Image 1 (tube, rainbow, N blue to C red):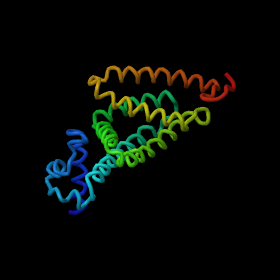
Image 2: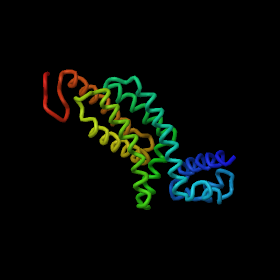
Image 3: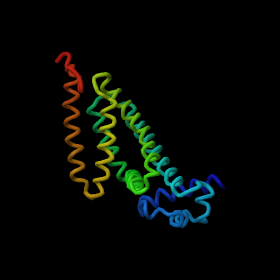
Image 4: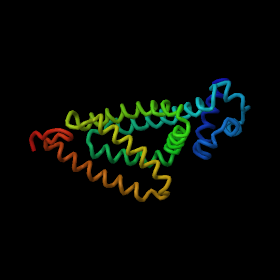
Length: 200
């Protein structure tokens, strides 16, 4: 029952972040949504911040597992861009990026929360670096591309809230798809991105 209550609170925190944002994610609001006593937030998590971080952990772990499954057999830069575009749509539909965006916004107002939110980006950076290494080997600057991809991804998802039909975001992803296939052609010709050329 204790573990079930904790998981119930995490689920309620996720829903509250999606529906009411960081400022609305109070212990009272989360407990009300979970149908439990407000004191249980502090009993299980010690603080509202810890509960919200647990909620961020859950959605991040679920989405990262989905990304790993989706990219498991991707072996080209073009296919990587295509799958990433589909996963972006899934992230928007699931509300995952709303939760991430709200936690980032909250950490700007609460500096003590920022290091913990940033630390939760590390698994994503490592995953992105592995993906770039898999499709490009040593021809791609995987670490820099990973950081750039995560930075872009966070930015485009934050801006998507200001562009409700996501028309411009989809246009950007379409252009990325085109450029990735051009880059793939250059790579197969022996061009090293971020370094010197070899054989063309």
